[in-house]
Structures are given as C-alpha cells and as structure tokens.
Length: 402
Image 1 (cartoon, one colour):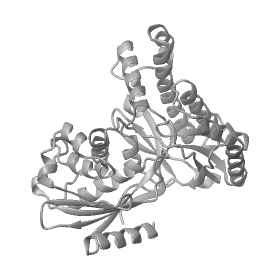
Image 2 (tube, rainbow, N blue to C red; image 1 turned 90 degrees about the vertical axis):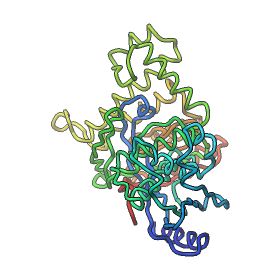
Image 3 (cartoon, one colour; image 1 turned 60 degrees about the vertical axis):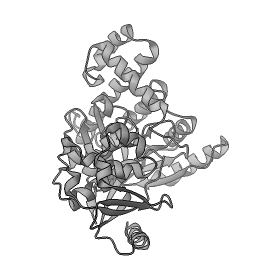
C-alpha cells in the first residue's frame, strides 16, 4: 500500500505539476461464494482483499476533469458541463477505455437519483494506480469505481452513504462501461471489514459483516490466477443474464431470488434444458450462500459438529461444480486448478468472478499452502498451460481516505 501511495503521488506530480490534495483507495474483492446471484437479486458473500487501487485527487479552479493513470499514456479530459449533458446512450458511446470507469462514476454522481449537481462542483485532476490484477476475477474495475466514488463524494461534499456509492459504481459499470454486472463488487469494496465477509442481500441492498475466522484458524485464501483473460462486456455474461431473466419470466416471478430449491422440479417441466440449468445454478447457489453464512456463524450446528471456515469446503466445491456443469462459465484451466488444489489438501476450492477465465480460490491451511501451490504449478505444466500466478489474499478493510 505504501509503495502505491508513493507511486500515485509521484505520478500525479509528474503529470499535473503539483502534489495531490488527497489520496483515496479501495480494494478488489474475492467472492467467497455466490456467483451470478447478484443481478438475480439473490445473496452473495464477498470480502475485500489486501490488493488496492489508489487515486490521487487535486482541485482545479475551472470546470475540467483531467484523468491519468499508470494503465495508459493518455491523459483524458472532459468538461463537467459536457459530462453532465450526456444521456445514458451518450455515456455508453462516448466514454470508453479505462477512463470510462472513472468518468462514468463522475457522470453517475450527477444523476437525479443520487442528488448530484455537476453544475455546482469544481473541476478535478485524478491519477490512478493499482495492484489489483486485471482480468483475474478480483474486480479491479470495482476497485477503481469505489476509490473514485469515495474520493469525489468527499471532495465534492455530496454526503452520500456507502450503499449509495456502491450503486453509483454499478451504474457507471452498467452504462458507461457496458458491463451488465450486479452490485456485489462495489459493495464488497466499500463495506469490507478485516477478517470478515460482506453478506449482501442484493434485493434489499442490506449488508451485514460476517466473521470469517480465517486468522484464528490458520487458514488463508489462495488465489490461482489462470491468466485466461475475460471481459464482462462481452457476450457470455450477457447471455447468462438473459437466460436467468427468461427463466424468471417463465416461472412467473420478478427474479430468481423468488425461486427456491423446492421449485426446481416445476422449473424442469417448464424450461428448456439450457435455461433450466442456468436457473438451477442460481437457485442452488443462493442456498449455498445462506448455508455458508450459517456455518460460519455456527447457526444450527449440533454440539461437536463442525462449524466455521473449516466446515465450508464442500459448499465451495459444490459451487464450482454448479458453475462448471449448469452455468457453464468455467474453463479447463479453472477446473484443473480447483481439482488439483482439493487433491493437494485444500479445504475447498472454486472459481471466482464472472467466469470464462480469471481466477480460482482455494481455502488452505497455512501448513498445506506450499504443497497446494507446487501441485497446481506442476499440474499446469503437465497439461501444457501457462504457469498460473498464485498468491495469498487476506480479508481487509474497504475503501478509505489514506
């Protein structure tokens, strides 16, 4: 973190000729369980990680937004008046590339639902750096959006609460970036607490922190980044979302949140095979999230029966099987990572993120960590896959001014 803050200060000064007025940061996230349930108004259980995006911000005495980063050489600028005049269609068309995540947040803050008035705020200079891996399913995009949203909320004195800032980030990603994602990633980035997960009800947007107990149990989360890149703005993600919407309509409900495991036999009768399997994943995944939360909290467990992080391995394994077989968003590299990690001693493992590439996570005892990493590396080599990037993440605090 210290190095990134220093790098942002140096980079900001090099581009804009003076030091920033302040630094803000926000973390990426790992989704412990609950994949593709968020936009179906279901349940998710992510946690913020100790990889962060940092933004330096400086005030201007005019109406310009000027944005630079370590991601690209270009300096992007737009007037606040031009930004405020963009319709959603214009925003999706005219904001592009990496800067769409930044300018999309500023645009969304000006919408009536967030009470923003871009005519009443000063221009800004922003410089961004990050150590959240891009394309690994760790939500580098939400880290940018959340850091920028918190910074602009503070600098412009908008007074929005963090759940509202999460919706700002989601609106930026949906409209400006064109990715039909839910609100999980931004919520985890903004609401995270050290060694806790964020149990989020994506319909009510109520978030509760749930103790993970990983530190006490001597357990770490190993991220296995396959290096297979994905993009939420491409077709596979949108096709899965459309299938979920078709399934909900056929079942006569607003969203798949309102379908229970007991309803699946009726769903099988009503739906074609592909749509049924998409629905089955979401419905069973919602139940797995609830079961994981109860297990971590020790709810309903008999005396002497396992609870806490050591007891959730099978839920993680079942989640991966569901994403592989029913939702069909895994890839061979992810399947291999999960299989080998469990065989080598992981408590449980699953792919995380939107799918079609990215990373898997494995819950691993510290004593088993080296063995799991070596086994995964060897398996990738034997199968002719590029070497994965494996690293440990810890559940960390959410977005903050630094």
